[in-house]
Image (cartoon, rainbow, N blue to C red; front, side, top):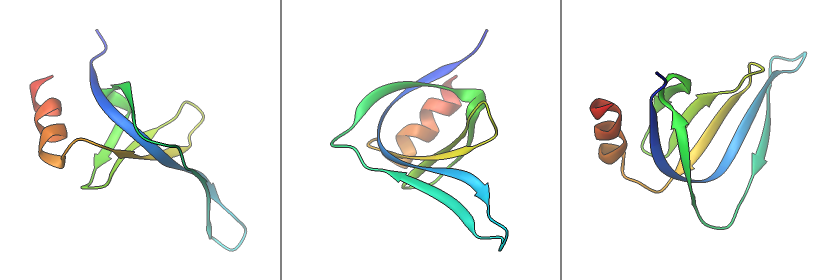
Length: 80
């Protein structure tokens, strides 16, 4: 059974890979406020104090801003 955590997420950056000069290709999406999202735990690659890094089906990486504290997210991941 797949496991999820519920997090309030906002703006995000999508990493589309690298160009011919090895510079990361990023797309920044800015949204107003935060909304609840269920995130599959197996898609989470890392958590920092500002971002949750997830992968996407086609190999892209997404850095999500989130509203909870780092310790709250850490506890959610520990509890699943």
